[in-house]
Length: 246
Image (tube, rainbow, N blue to C red):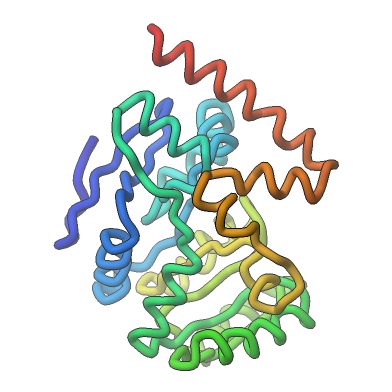
């Protein structure tokens, strides 16, 4: 384990070799990320779950993406149970996009929205205006573009404090790393389907599922075709059990 250099200390542990911050509470995460934004230490985020932990062990690109991220946060059952079984630590499943939206609203930050369809991207602007009235949406760009320079120019003109990038993993992390070369002081927050949620086109799981770390089950229930994507959970648990035993 090792500690960050920010005022708010958050320890980082290895989960089957995959690094992840031990976020124990919303308030701890709020202080930590707020300091990171204020410090102008640019970077991109990586949400750590069972699939990422497995891929880290065997996929060079995934390992590189996670190692180079400025924030590796627990994002699911896999990360939570790994902390509990391997390190006897209780952490929370951090809704990083939601946290960043709260911080941005409380401090009137300038935010750039990148990703989703044109319709949903535009609708997300309205969703933010309704839910987070103090956020300044400085610019936006849908996820269907062919010219990266166009995106670079749009971000340059917007001068945002941070960028919410909804492209799906690992595409959003790869794109963030590329854009970071032009904006070394900007924080890129991977937010998956959050723009679709803000647009009112996608619903999150009910709070009961989220609080009990069963959001994955809710998505599976709503979309049975995701069963193939969830099979890796059994493989992950077997590996974790063997690691704990030996």
